[in-house]
Image (cartoon, rainbow, N blue to C red; front, side, top):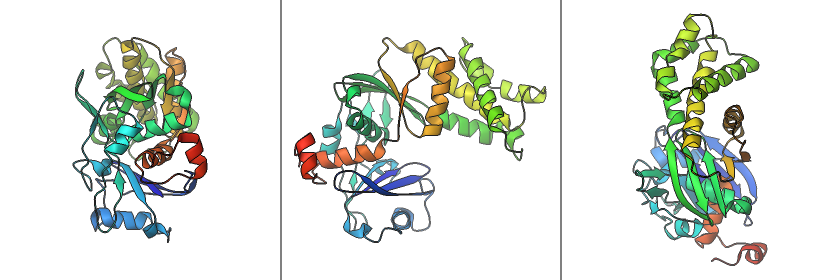
Length: 316
């Protein structure tokens, strides 16, 4: 099977054995907003070019490929939901000869409408790899649109979105706050870490949220308190620190907490938790491949090996 995580700015693929073992990986810059000439079909061909047997393998994909701006829209599934609910709603469109399975994504309406595409698959993967989280846990998925997700009894029961990554991109690339770093020499790792931690510290002590603090990324540079390139790390610390501070303040109970995603970004969140005096979440890495495999098996899209039948039951 080939499993694909197709996002807004990039996409990744994993070539997998019948038991879910990842045999190979590929990636490309062709997110749904950055497609090559020829659109989605051309991006898929380029992504899988090094796998000559790809044409004969089943495909399953999650992420923005199933959005209104994606290749084929697949309706959301309502919360609460688990892997079986996602599998029942798996889209199976004919697209340029391929018939991929597309994971539908999730939505909720209370307390405010919220949606996710792609993160639900990572959550399914995290629960498959770490069954101890299934009873009750908070899963944090940092990224362009960070998600804070509550899981109970193996089901996603609710979530909240923070646009931390997108705010950072907009402010650092399209506002006066990002100008000092333009063309500046790369910052040393220890200086970057110190600037990030300084931003987290500033956010943690603010009772008014991050908005009144943002201009300090420029004023610190102008008054000699911050190097040009380090302004981006300081701004990152402000935004990440404010996100964590706000969600921790809004928590009504302390569930076991994990960080799901790439090591570098999750590592920054872990630093911020420590600085804020909160228990540091466990890091479980990128669990999308495991989630795509689990949903494919639940949907009968991929028949498990006999070993999988014994472990999980034959869901085909």
